[in-house]
Length: 257
Ligand SMILES: C[S@@+](CC[C@H](N)C(=O)[O-])C[C@H]1O[C@@H](n2cnc3c(N)ncnc32)[C@H](O)[C@@H]1O
Image 1 (cartoon, rainbow, N blue to C red):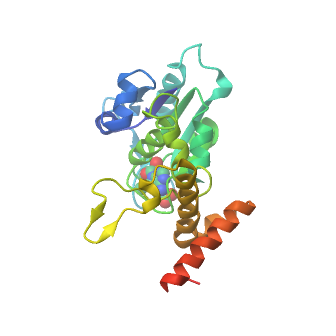
Image 2 (cartoon, rainbow, N blue to C red; image 1 turned 180 degrees about the horizontal axis):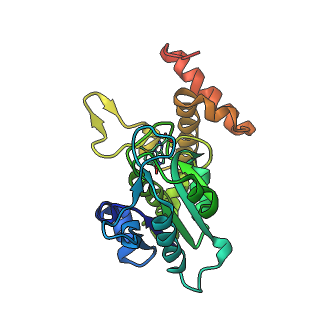
C-alpha cells in the first residue's frame, strides 16, 4: 500500500514515521510513503500558499491551485499498477467522518491513500468538493494542522497490513476489532505489591485462558465503554460470561449497577 501526504510541513511527517512499526514497515518496503508540499507548486515569486478569506474574518485559507497541482502529482505517483478504484483522496478535517477501527480496516484494503493536511483556517471549499473523495476527522476537537491526523491514520492502517506486526493475529485481538475493548495484560513478576497475576493465566490451559480473556474483554467494555455493547449482539456464551463478570463484581461489592 502507498500513502501520499499533501502537507506544508513534509519534515514533520518524515520525522514521525521513521520510528517503531511505521519505520520498520517503510524500511521493509511493506508500505511506501511520499510527501508533497503545495509550496513547491506555487506560481509566484513569494511562493504563496494562502490568502485572506472572502467575507473577512480571522486567519488565512489555503489556495486552490497549489493544493490541486500537488494532489495531481501525488495521485499519479502511484503509477499504472494502482487501480483507480483502490485510490482514495481524503481531506483531514474536524468536520469529517469520524475515524474509527472499522474505517481503518476498510482503508487498509486500498492500494493508495492520499491524505491532505490543511493548515490555518483550512482550505478553499472548492478543493474539498472537486478534488477530494472524503473528509475524515480524528475527533471532535480542533488541532492546528492535518499532519498529526495523517500520522495517526497512517499508523493505524500500517499495523493492519500483512506481515507488518510480528504476529499478524496481534492486530485482530486489539481493542475495537470485534467491537470490544481488549482484555488486560500481565507480565513478570507474577507477584507485585500484593497483586498476583490471575491463576488462570499461569495454568497453561488455553481454553480456560481464552474464556477468561473474553470475559474480561466483555466486562471492561461494559465498565468503560457501555456504548459499544449497545451496538453488539452478544451470543449466549458471551452473555453468560458478561453475567459472570458482573456477579464476580457483586461478590467483591463494587458493581457499577
Ligand atoms: C485550525 S484547523 C481548521 C479548522 C477549521 N477552521 C474548522 O473550524 O473546521 C487547521 C487544519 O487542521 C486539520 N484538523 C484540525 N482538526 C482536525 C481533526 N479533528 N481531524 C482531522 N484534521 C483536523 C485540518 O486539516 C484543518 O484544515
